[in-house]
Image 1 (cartoon, helix red, strand yellow):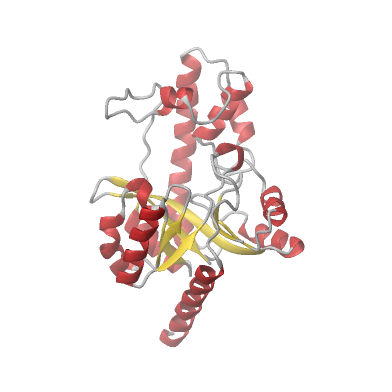
Image 2 (cartoon, rainbow, N blue to C red):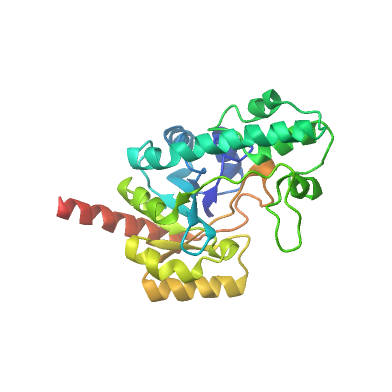
Length: 288
């Protein structure tokens, strides 16, 4: 089994790298991509743990980006990226700081509204990662008995963006994501393959031709949010633009709704991913 999309507690997952990779081993996952949001922290450690447990670790990232031309979000996965490469660090470090500061402000608003939590509690839950996320705030609220799950009525009441008849959440604070084109370029500069994650979620299909020109190499086909028709549409774009297909569970542990290994990318897709990466490496050697 091959899972090319998961998150640890370095970003917005609940499990440590050791817990995550151990779970992968238990589930019979042979190849696992660690794709934490906006950081490559922990990738070297993950590789070492994988070697000890017999799980092949693909170093990855998922950059939280924005398509400013079409005014919608877009997530870009990067596979085989070089850990701590300056192109990714320079692009993502301001975003990490901005998200952490936004979480602080959101927590203060929630406290002001009468909820008995503290910023120190939220920080403690996020201590192993790159900063606090809304999931850590919700975890603190769950610990105090205000909710029994991360995503539900309370999450919407606090964090909803509003629109389409829904009121804006009392703690909603927007942050400025990086430009999707910059994300694609940064991943390539870091030696990785840029892949469009779960295109159905943000309806990114119509942007694919432009992003291919910039350097997009793949598209996520198998994902919990994708049904058979979505997979067919992904295959159409993959065939049209010679993109590789990937897939994974988008696992976040307690902070998500999907089980690790619930979506298997399959060995054929992994081999094509590896082949594309090797060709890219060979092309770089030729140019140099």
